[in-house]
Length: 446
Image 1 (cartoon, rainbow, N blue to C red):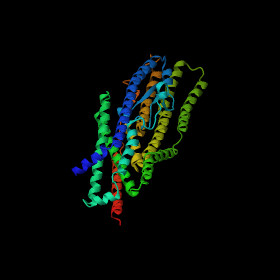
Image 2: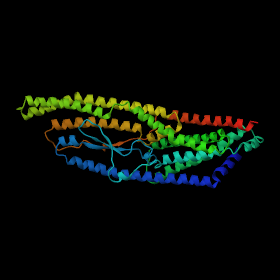
Image 3: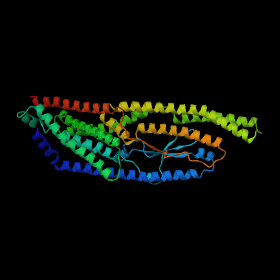
Image 4: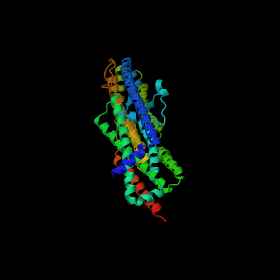
C-alpha cells in the first residue's frame, strides 16, 4: 500500500506538465480570491457611505408626505463567504426602495464603478476549480491506467482488483489532499487579509469544500471510465472532451433553461402590481367622492376622515395587497424548490445550485430578502400613517433604527445537501464499478 502511495505521488507531482497545471490553478485561485476580497472591502466602504447618505436624506424631508413618497433604500449585504463565489451567485449588487407605493422593486445599480464590474465565467474561486479543476482531474483519470499490456503484466504480480483499487485510492488521496490544501490555503489567505468569518460560516465553507472534492473525484472516475470504455485507444481523447463539455457546460445550461421555462408559469409581476394598484386607487376614489359630497367640510373633519380611510386601508386594501404579494412569493418559492430537487439529479448542476446558496446570494437569499422587505414595509406603512395623521406636523423622525436598511443575507447549505452529497458519491461509485467491470473484459479477453 505504501509503495503505491509513493509511486502515484511521483507520477502526479513528478511530471512537469502536471506541476505547471497545478501551479496555474493555484495562481488563478489566489488571484480571484484576492480580487473577491478587494470587492468585499470596497462594499464595506460603500456601505458606510450608503448609511450616511440615507441618514442625511431623511433630515431633508419637511413632511411625512415626502417621507412616504420617497421612502428609504434597503441594501442587500451577502455573507463574507461571497468573496469565494462572486460570479457563481444568482443575485449581484441589489437594493430595494421601501416607500408608500404598492410595487416592491429589487434593482441593480450600474452607477460609478459598478458599470465596469462585468462578471465573467471564471471570476471567482468556485468557478476556477469547477472548470479547470474538473478538466485536470478528468485528464489524470484518463491516464491513470496505462494500457492493457501493462495491466496484464501487473496481473501476474497481484490481482487486477487489488491493483485497480490501490491505484485509484492512491491517486485520489494525493489529488484530494492538494485541493483540500488549496481550499484551506485560500481561506487562511482571506483571514490574513482581514476578513472575519463566524464559526458557522467556517463550518459551511468546510462542507462546501468537502462536496467540491467529492465532485472532483467524480470527474477523475469519469475520466478513468472513459479511458477504459474506449479501450485505451487514442480516440478516447475525443470522448474525454465531449464528457467534460457535457458535464461542465451543457448540463448546467440545460438546467438553467429548464428552471426558466418552469418560471413561465408564474403570473406576471407587473400584473400583480397592477392589481395591487387598483385596490389602492379604489380606496382613494372613495375618499375623493367624500370630498365632492362635502366640499365645505372643516379641515379638522377632513383630517379625521383621512385618518379613518388610513385605518380602513390598513385593515382592508393593504392586507389584500400583502396577501397577493405573499401568494406570488410562494409561487416563486415553488419554482425554486422544484429547481433544487431537479439539480440533485447530476453533480455539476447541484454544484451550481449550492455555490449560490453558500454565497448568500442564491435563490433562498432572494426569498429572505423579499420577506424582509415586506416585513419592514409593513412596519414603515404603519409608522408613516400614524405620524402623518396622529401628530400635527412634527419634525420628521427617521423610521430606520440600528441599520435596519441593511439586509444581511447569511451563507447557507440547502436542506437537500446530504442528499446531493449522497447522489454525487453514488455517481462516483457507479463509475468506479463500471470501469472495473469493463477493465476485466479488456484484460482477460482472448
